[in-house]
Length: 295
Image (cartoon, rainbow, N blue to C red; front, side, top):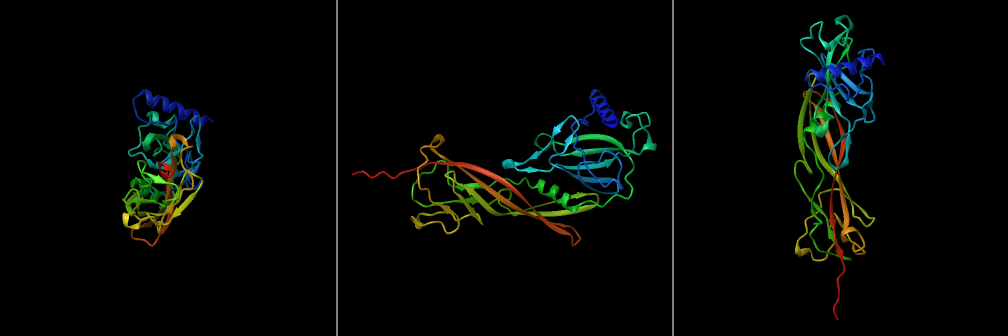
């Protein structure tokens, strides 16, 4: 508790001095206690040399700050990626950065977390024992940094169109436009602690919630419709509405398309590799009418 109070006091001093360091909303991080002593708790970290790369737990709560989540397109929640670096050169002995301590207590570190508004960096400082013998950087965390550079988004829905005319009982064809950020493939690299990871992402499936209670899973972008197909059903991704949308809000069904991205990564110059998934959403509205027969 005493450490936290000193930390908060330092944050207030820094604010008054006009220095952009925000200790009050920093996400606590974790490194094995035998390797690093100090306020590293709450998440997963790895380090090499003077760099420490961390991936904070989603439900981590900093004292007095509330829970911090990093939300991406379509409501997806990902863990904020943080880095910790020993300040070079170290502040003079009378600097406020020492929080009343000295070099006998360790060193001053700067922590940066990408969990501010719109991914803006949040920076704070703290004093901790010198991290000697720390574990290597976790390449999976660096891979997530690489994925963040890709700006992955939800599907670019080409059909159904919000302005389209669709009829009960007539097969609807669903498909999306393929782009680097909406379907892939997309690649990016990131480096931390001397480890460089290259990640490649691509969509493996799209799940459509049609608004009438039906869910359709498509393992590709879908097939674009042309007039030559007539009233055939889509061979890859389609749906048939059995009732109109007249009773729904705005007279339309709300359609939500959720894409699953597979992100494959590898450490450059090494056989180390892995994979994780991300999800993104897009939505549209579609009006379904009835064919009226005039007699």
